[in-house]
Length: 122
Length: 106
Image (cartoon, rainbow over all chains, first blue to last red; front, top):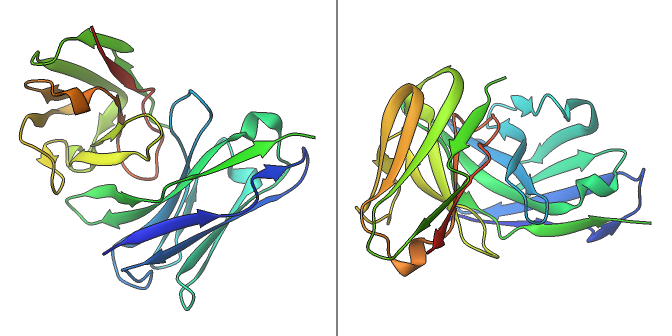
């Protein structure tokens, strides 16, 4: 049974750095074809893909946010950490992490965390 | 970067009706990787369709996906009350989502 859960601050101030942790179970991030992604959703708006880290430590970032994002993984703790610098009120959103399974015939987010709402305000 | 345009933005239908949702890409994409997600209010998204036409585990067969190249379609053959939600397409995992189509009760 695959589960993921996001954790981190619910409130950050403008210009601060946000650190979110995705803690997962039921899979290993050392298994070929597995990744963990981050997706966010501002209140009332659409999903926005942020970043994805693969089993081989390959990392992909949204081009528009690349300069502000960093992904790391700790396979011993089954965790993936996303940091986003220079937070702004427009970054207020629910942040989701999701399990990615990738092969030559599919590439999908098939399990999602419940999401965590992060508000950026002074 | 691929841009996905979903249409219509909102679809107003009654239970039992057929829903046809469109996802158009700015460039040709590998249909093996096109996915559709469903999101109901207050919930995380759920994978519906992957590889453009394969249903994810537990997804009822009233949901079907089709298309190739730049044009993809999600069809819900007969809307059930739990199907009223927002639907997103994504060409592959490390890429933007479409803007979504909201299917609402008429």
